[in-house]
Image 1: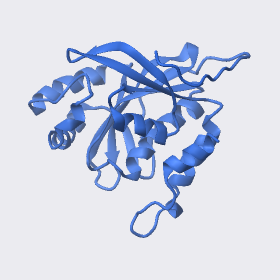
Image 2: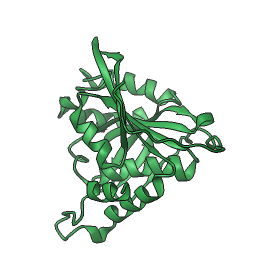
Image 3: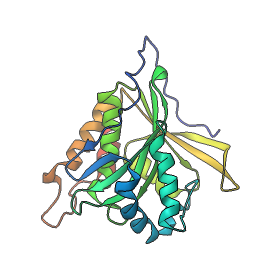
Image 4: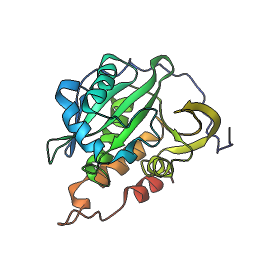
Length: 232
């Protein structure tokens, strides 16, 4: 593992309340619905087929047909960990991406956000960032987790940049962590801790405020600037 700045915390701690419930999370720009293949597969297959690069760093995909994606989504819908969501773009009303909770360990207060992909309907838009915000907020404020993790292929520069933009702290690289599609994967690890969340929550709320965007929808202050300031 590559060394990273250390954050040491002590004292008595409590476990999280339990795993996330299979319930929707709603925001202004996006709605996260627990995956329902019959409801979501047609739209998810359509938007993902237009952009096969989505699957470059995923352990699955691309899918050769809607039927193949349906079979995969059926497995996703049956599981509790990962707990998969379809990301519904509020403007179009379409399923336009996916995300999940995984590595859910309530007894240690640790949970990961992953299996994330955004179609062009979400990418570089408020809906994508709001989806991540809703998941982090649910973990900390709703369920009492004390650590939210983000992991990605160490070669995935876009995911690493996104983690930092969302306020996650880089913890290091775990070498030869996984074998994915027959290839080695070194994994970059990031986290937000519960004590860091209040300031980062304020950064997200400031960024998502409609007053932070002009009439053309352009941001006045970037999320990366706000989260960096929240981390001091």
